[in-house]
Image (cartoon, rainbow, N blue to C red):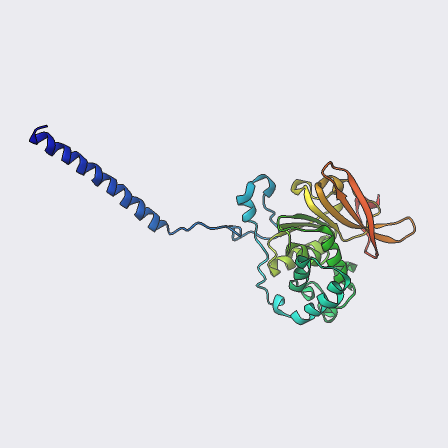
Amino acid sequence: MDKKERVEKRRRIAAFFGALAGIVLLCGILILKSGTKPGIILASGDKKADSNQAPADVNQQGVKEYKKVPRPDHNHPAFKERVDERKKMVATQIRARDVKDPNVLKAMLIVPRHAFIPKSQRRYAYSDYPLPIEHGQTISQPYIVAFMTDALKLKPDSKVFEIGTGSGYQAAVCAEIAREVYTIEIVEGLAKTAKERLKKLGYKNVFVKAGDGFFGWPDKGPFDAIIGTAAAKRIPEPLLEQLKPGGRMIIPTDSAWGFQYLVLITKDKDGKIHKSKVMPVRFVPMTGEVQK
């Protein structure tokens, strides 16, 4: 190889390494400009999302969509009010009666029951009995709310359907544990009030609509758990269909002798339904299609 060829070879090598250095430098600049770091998205990027706009079905969109489901934010002043009363309520009314699930106990400590009750009744908010709310309805006894929630065995990825929103208190308790709560109320005025209340309190993972709970919420099912807060004459068939295999339902039902019982319903992996009476109760009656 003569001198001229050696000089040309060195020139090509220098040009190659110069180009490579330029590419590396350009990549570094782009990374610095982006300023992004890997992380988990915990809330929806839609700042306008509220409890009236249900997200697309998470079951069909994979893990990334699941992580976008917003959680309750607890920024409302009510969460910091009457905390000692809630502690006493949980200790004496709930834990003392063998409700032991730590997630349920935590939810009952967090949710400000007084924020779901008319002003005239708020001094009784943490008492051991149901209270009247708007439209002639009631908010359930704290122990019953805890007992029914405990019976559902909720997990952080559970999707819950509730029949009978009422004040929204039961939905809020479930929303502290579960991923999403879909709740339906046949009294339109109650549905509107509950939706506004839950939105104001920061429950972005609760979705409320007015309608007849007999038919469930088919376009958002199937559900891991279903809870009824009004006494039905019979178990609505659509609810059984919308319960996932492995799912659990608890609902008050009327008996032939005029008594009401909480009935726990489970669906096994083969789709077979199992029912058991767990407790005598007294709930307002479920209205609509179920009465026909």
